[in-house]
Length: 299
Image (cartoon, rainbow, N blue to C red; front, side):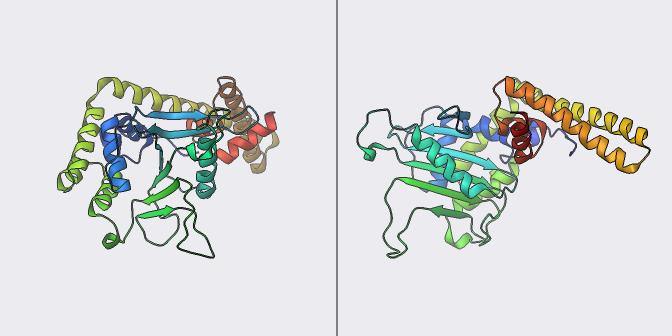
């Protein structure tokens, strides 16, 4: 388990989910970011919902959306910050699309054309597809007639902060994606985009806000102490069993079993509080697939 080191709030980049969510809660900054990504002026937005949990039934898996909002034309935007490589991102975006769509039509509405236009946007610090692009935009296209697009109103966009095709995207988008990974005064000052300057004003406001600083400290402490508690108990039980057996194998096994047992205890507590697998994985700094397996073994 990796050791948590607290990065000061003033040094966080927008790739860090805490800062990203705080900045995106401001409708104007949120609107500027969406306008850069989509290359057009975005209408006024409703206040964003961060860490929005969506569940369609008690039997279906819920999802937690990073930043969810709707504009005055009822277009829906879900923006996710993805700092770590995950092998399931493509299918995760498909599941998000289905979950979002399920909540857009009220019972009894007969016309599916009333479904809102939706944009699912993942901002990543890596190139998921390996073509060196800053932006990968997906809409359903007919295989037999490539120019025939299925106009279903759904768009999925994967952004790569480390793209190389500067001549194929707007300078503003390239500047923004560099700024996301290097959210500093210097990067903002050298940017030609007025929108980036406005976004950075919001970043500075967040960093200087005392209440936000306290919120950040509490969030970090919760993760830190959860990790330390699991580590210490796992080590103690591992050593005890290892000494009893007198074998290196016993020490390793004891550590693993102790850690697993403590993880199970922590998971039970967080499940009782209504936490999702994704939230538990984030809080305990564990792989979400590991957490799901443990949850399955507990139920």
